[in-house]
Image (cartoon, rainbow, N blue to C red; front, side):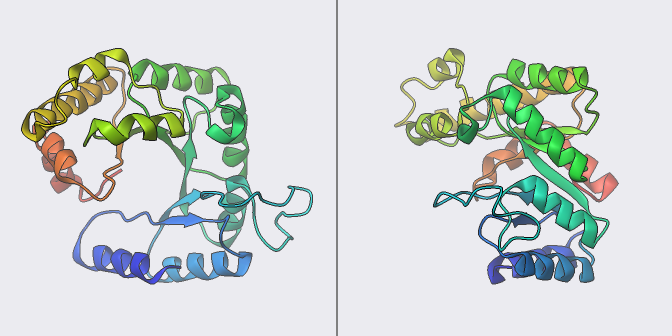
Length: 248
């Protein structure tokens, strides 16, 4: 457990009424380190965690040689299984409506991988960010067709700037619709206009998802929360947080 993450979790736990859900990754941790992190979180009252594989900086050993009994875990499904055996956490996992880059952006492969994580004990799935709402809705339909009833939370990325966004989206396999590209044309040198358009895009995306029955959202703030906060104010989300004392 990284000390800065731990300290941040403790501060939020002590000074807010929010439901805190720290990330636990497995690709860079030994089983003993995972056990320690999970036990410390549980002992401090944390009941929600996000279980992720983590970024691979070097090719992992084959699944045959690394597993629950091996030196390190390779897959998020293995991590979920370990966490589920340790404590009765609410476990969120990742889902990729446009496919994971490591699987060749195959949506079918991602659905199969999500099924493994659900079988291991995942409680809900949070998607990779997307800008085309139809992508999320089609993915949700795929899960429903396979009777995968796990709650699916859309991942929303506020557009803070376009110069780096397009490259970031390409690396993550996220499609940027032509309408969004056109909306931001010529705004790189005008931060105020860019912020206005970005807020409108963000609110419009949330409104459309709500119209299709979505009630929980996950915002990727990338350590810059101002645009998310502005959108939440416009969407009257703060009143809901104050009433429920928790965030999904």
